[in-house]
Image 1 (cartoon, helix red, strand yellow):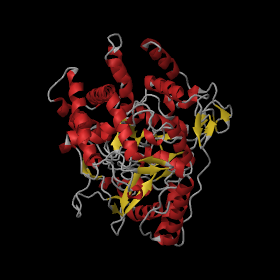
Image 2 (cartoon, one colour):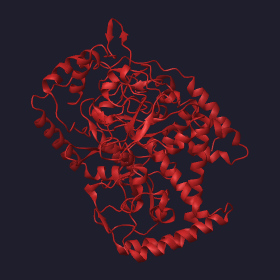
Image 3 (tube, one colour):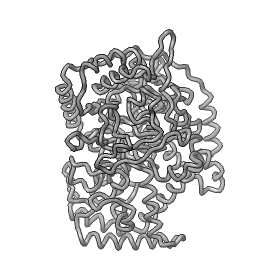
Image 4 (cartoon, rainbow, N blue to C red):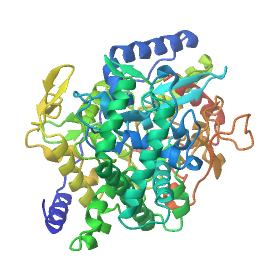
Length: 598
């Protein structure tokens, strides 16, 4: 391992290298408005259904597979958490509904909520190890919307607006503290182990299929025999496995507390409660480095530097149609230009974008196959079509306005970042040190020589990109810092399902984005009902409906939660683009209608 000083010096040197910006891509083609929306809507849905079916294996890995076969939360321990502290967790049907993970009715026999994977699905040796659980890609990127008839439409590649990753970690920590019953020394692990094993025996006697629900997938059977064998293996390794789980849970809580204390002073209680549909993902990832340093006497002083310098809380993103955000090589094949998938486009290569999200969990031996299957799935995954009615004539008027004022920026493969007055806190969180560390960790997890087995064939998923060898191109894994101080203007396919808007989710609907003087100071987030008129999920606290959903979200509480931005007209060259439609609301309504068709 390099010394902390060497890492810091290398990071500083890397940050001093200048990289000239390239010319923007050609003007975007503006999609036509369909003459018959119900027909077009049905065709879009059929296309997405067919795509998912043709990518079934990749979709299953995206939705259900754990990020590591050898690390994470012991799966049996995870399912026992509500037995230790039922008051902290959710319903008997789904204890993880307390943190916004839901039972996907399309896979009713799956033994846990959508968004949790267990390693038995990917492990070749059925009983070669205990099953470990982790969040999956689908935890954040399979969303829901409620239709007019009350049915749920699943948004594959969209956003799970109800998932509260912070609250999961807090509840896991609180569960352990309850189990310890005040014990603080090493004896606390023995107490926890005894209570988990007692709960295990009582639960399994009552239901021999409690942990796996007799689930079957791709010829694998997680039946009562599999469950009994896993329980025996868990008991055999329980002392070590449970201690490691407890220490990791405590360390993550400690690290998150340090992050909150550093970047969210005065906002600690809100951050600890968590915001469903949001996370400080850069901070969560950096916590892993903080954990490793904080107990080392020689490096303890360095631990605080590892954490990001600014608040980085953002909304989750939709991840469909990654081909429209795909970067390309410059003429020298040294730099990637004209593309970006995240808020500020700082990870230009798709498989590494997937990997960096996985590395947020801090697991050892991250399963690169998950990232590779996600790359395969998301490259051409269609956006979910708007599921409600559209006024076609109004949409046609909106198309012309969109072409004039929006399309030049919101075009495919536009890697340029913009400062339109939104909070720049998120844009500055990846400093020189984090940039350098990310390069290193991404390369260690997937170098040009890394080999995995996909669809029965050995492949090297990081050997090349866009036909160009990645050998000697480690610098391309992250874009230079001076090129991502701002936010991408992403293509707007499926933008109806990205609500709320701006990178920090502080604007509830497209109407409020276009008419900034009506933006509310607080609104309801995480409802599943939809506001078809203003284009966003149901947000108005004065219209509670008949369901107790969502949470109150107050904007402008800290700088990182500012709802300012994208609210003033901008001029580039001789052309002025209208962003504030307050004096032309008819134009705003037309653009809203057009966006429904994308």
